[in-house]
View 1 (cartoon, rainbow, N blue to C red):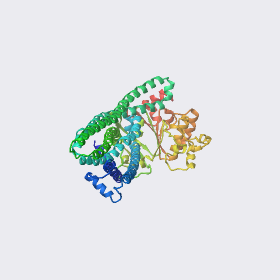
View 2 (tube, helix red, strand yellow):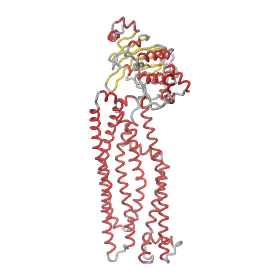
View 3 (cartoon, rainbow, N blue to C red):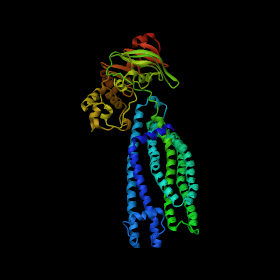
Amino acid sequence: MSNRKSFLSQLVRQYAGSLLLVFLFNALSVLLTFCVYLLIEPFCKLLFTGQLSNLSPVSSYVVSRLDVYLDFTNLSTSITLLIALAILLYFLKSLFAYLTQWFMATLRSDLLYRLRNKMYYKILTLPLSFFSSKQRGDVVSRAVGDTQEVEFTILNALRHFITEPITILLFLAFLIYINPRLTLYVFLILPLPFLAIAKISSVLRRENKNSKQRMGVLISQVEETISGLRIIKGFNAQRKAEEQFQKFNDKYSDTQTRIFRRVDLASPLSEFLGVCIVMVVLVVGGTMVLSPGSSFSPELFITYVAIFPQLISPIGNFSTAFSNYKRGQAALDRLNEVLEADEVILQPEHPVAVDSFKDALTIRDLSFAYADAEVLSDVNFQIGKGKMVALVGPSGSGKTTLVDLLERFYDPTSGSVELDGVDIRRYDIAQYRSLFALVSQDVVLFNATLFDNITLGFPATEEEVMRAVRVAHIDDFVNSLEDGLQHRLSDRGLNLSGGQRQRISIARAVLRNTPILILDEATSAMDTESEHQVQQALDEAMRNRTVIVIAHRLSTIQRADDIVVLSGGRVVERGTHEELMKLEGTYYHYIQIQNLH
């Protein structure tokens, strides 16, 4: 609840000026509408009796003000001028109503723009651990679908919360003035639509939250299917994938059907109850008019009957807005789960500036756990400047996690990583990470140009990019393209071969020219010829750099200055290739298995 109040309070503070204008223009629009209905009694008197006697005090005041401009002794002229005045007032009312919507539209679109930006920024700053515990499709559903849902529900409801109460209060006050007794009957039955809508809304909020969760599952299923389409087709698993998707889709559709039925019930139910209230007004009011000696004139009753329905629509809108607000709370709750998630990797209050690597990276008594699962325990070793260090071990031994800790994608559970004797948690995060370049086995390419994929926002000229492209031995491919570096890649670069994607990743790392280079099975996706070419490029790129290599193919790391063997999250052996072979331990066993010695 506090999160929702915070959202609304921020909204009011941030857009106070626009909201005030919305309120003022709407108030003017309602007042002009009210003025139109004040002309009904004088109009009826002129039409039915030809004179303006026995008017209510309010109508008498209106006539006295208009008498300066209108000659009420001329019947046809007076009626014509009253109609013209009503048209003019209604035109001005419509103008102010449009201005209300104009400012509200600007507010809604701007808020949605800011909310989307805030969500995207939060996704960029959240730690990797946040996404390892959630489905990607669910996060996408929140960032896109739930953000839009806030606009459709809460912001739309806010407009009605601002505009409708003015109409309701003003017209209700006038009805009380015209006939308090008749209005009392209205008061007794008026809560019925609110109670009915409130009951529907309480169910809607729960169902809408389920709907959002199931939409997230559906999006995740589609993402996984597209990513694994080659495997699905290769193993003839289309039927299984279809059944799985249909199961999730059935659950989502069932939830949506229940939501649609309840939403669709709100409007006709409100209209039905509204008509019932109008019938009560007609019966009770008509009886009052026909009572002997009644001061409730037919003209005033017509005015009452004309004004009363003007309450039905605002009350219905207010009820619907309340229902939508309840629906929107579910979307807002899901957004807040992301927006208020702990960032964990925090910028220090007074960060230490860093722009170079001078001595060594030191891993000191380092341990790390995901939730309750320990991944690394009591790891100690040092990576000297200009050295090549290899991390070896079976899958799940903690190699990738250790590299993620070095780049400060995570913070250790205990112990520390130090750069040149300073705990990396004291450094400016962006400056520290700029010391690293990564060439990974899983190459990530974006639906953008080759130039943009290589630079990733790094300020570089085409000449500098082409130099990196030549080092990565992909210049022949780039030159063969009609658009060269401006060639746009498909989603994730799937229109390229694995070797081409890998060499683009290498060009990206070469361009940055960072002091530390991380190679995570950098040549694993290449054929023998490509591997030979790229290994030459990597040899050149590694010169005068500190290199950290994660390797399963142990032939690639025999030249390493230091080989760190991990098993079960612990360092079990360290040394050069020759030293570890002499031990005939874990590393020797791996070599034997791979028949490399």
